[in-house]
Image: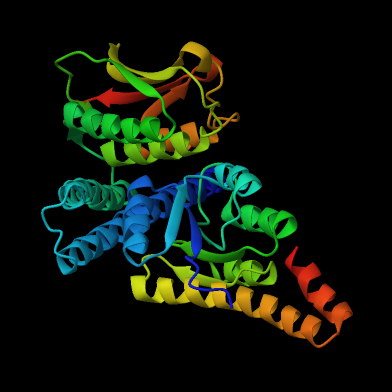
Length: 214
Length: 152
């Protein structure tokens, strides 16, 4: 029994390390983008073009990158908590907002539209919202082999028993082309142990289940 | 002999915001810049247009940057490739250099350093062509041919 626990512990740590790698990659990208944006503003000032549309765009980009970075920093703290103890209740609405922002960024890059089917009021949930975001980010990154015409992604959020389901579903021509992240479900088991419940449905849909707050 | 040629640069990175901003900064420095957002797009691009220098990220969805570099060197060896990555390992660097990558920079890189590397990469390419011309002018057509063959 002890041997099984040790194996699971090692797997959980390895999974958490992979998550940390994802977070680190994201944070570095955000910082690199901010640095380039600040550089662009300096370039524009040097060229006397501070009122240019490019400058306004740069300011908006900086604002967005700072917001994303704060989310990532929150993720780091949350992952630390996750590794040390079980995660507590959190605001599902805020987590879903972050998840939508992430999905929309990914969808924009692949010329997909994002549809929403989200109730106005979400029940409070338990688990780890940062980990949820990392997982979704990981899956979206692996789903990049989507053809380049038509379709969209439906983001559906609904109560399922004592849990809240977050569903990312390809629509139109793309249905079925969204690959399941892990055929053997290893990630799912580990993610459950880390506090973010999820299942992958047939047909390539992805359902993430957040446990209800106790 | 070549006049003042604008260096053609292709940026390959899946971070749209990053690459858009970097492209704008490089254009302000009088480089001719295009951007694509993954390795497959990069390979399609060089099938139609041949840039002088490619600035290539490693960690991207789909094809990894090392695979893209390998393919570029196989099909368009004269294109100079600079790796610009946030997560390159020492092993990646060694592999990139072995495959013929011109340089390996870590993100974020100082713009002046990147521009200098792009210009050095371009100059090295021009230098090879110039030496082929010098051989040809000296009547040594065989050596000129060998140098140019490497460029094909």
